[in-house]
Each structure stands twice: as C-alpha cells, then as structure tokens.
Image 1: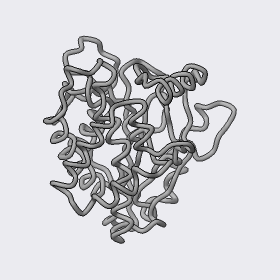
Image 2: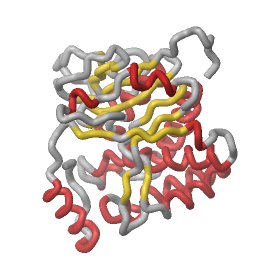
Image 3: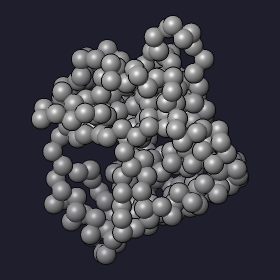
Length: 272
C-alpha cells in the first residue's frame, strides 16, 4: 500500500442489501442498495445505479453489481464487500451486532495485510467442482475454464487445483487494497462477461440465472492461488476473518436441499 506512514489508512466496505435492514454504525460501512435500477423503492441507502454501474444486471450478478459499483466509484486505501445478513467478526459476542468487525479492530492490520477473506468454507465430502455440479450446472464452470484458458492461461493451473479442493473462500466477501481490487475486478468481470456470451440463461430458472455470482465465489480462490503461487502475494499478507450470520439459517432446509441435489439431481432453487 503506497501511502504516507503517518496517514491513517482509509477503509470503505459496502454492505450489499436489497431491503431495509439494521446496519452497523461504524463509518467505514456503506449500506448499498443493490439492484436499484428500475426500482421505485427508496431504502435510504446509496444505490448501485449511481455513477458507473451494472445495476440492471443484478438479477444475474447478485451482489457483484455492488462490487462493480464499489470498484468504479469508491476511493480508499482498502475497499471491501459484506452482506446485510453476513458480516466479518474478529471477536464474537452474545449480541451479534456487537461482534461485527470495526475499523478499530481492523486498523492494526492495515498496511501489513493486503487481502482479508472470510474463513474457509469446508465441504468435506466433495470438491468445489462436484458441489457446484450437484447444486447448479457444471457446464458453467466448464465454460469458465474455457474462457480462462483462452484469455488468462497463466491461471489455468490454479483453476484446476482450486476446483479439486474441498474448501474455499466463499460469499464474495473480501477487503483488499485498492490496487489489488482494481486488478481483481478487471480480471473477474472480463471473464464473467465473456462466459455469459456462451450460456443460454433462458433455459435456466430465475434462481439459477444468478450463476455469475456463484462462479465468482469460486474463481476468487483461483485469483488468490495464482497470486500466491507466483509470489505476487505472500501468504502472510492474507488474513482470514471469521464471519457471522445476522439471520437464522434453516439448516434442515439447507441440508435436505443438499442431499436432494447430491443424490437425486435436484438443483437448488432458493437461498437458505
């Protein structure tokens, strides 16, 4: 991070939301109404259809329209993305709202850590590729590989390695130095826009059309793996932060849907 050592590093983290929800008071957070394009509702938050944006693609890109907005419109030493129902939490308290990461907690790491990720999500019994193939459509990952091989062949070994893993940094959550965010987003959206040219979304359900956001969850790991393997980012410059859910998860529904996907071939058709 190229900044005056005496200058306090600035951090801006968008909170992607499509509805009114309780928000943390820390000023580093910016509640962002994603998918605001064409909507008459005013949540009282900044909207992702301002400035340079792809808000109209929210039905396909999910929270990535927020990431795109942050990339194009925010200026800070570090920029990040969390969700209204999922936050970073260095220390957990009984009250979840008291657990949400604050600037004061983050500050000691700024300038030393370049990328903050959520703790790894572990799938244990299946690889990232297999899990995606069971719950969504493997052809989308196959096309992503084709695009990466064509446009960014230096990433293909990382792609193949990551897709065999049984864990990954998910949820499209991150906080990273602005220069790295610029690099990541340029790479990510170039790939996603190209992938979309060869996939017929009309054959997919409304829920399954949101595959762009799911692909990005996986290839974020590909981008990080390549950066580390090529010594462009040291492992010590990456820090995992635990995450918390602000809404109760229906684990019975989630578990049942997973088993149906794995053993009966019934794809996911909703969040949990």
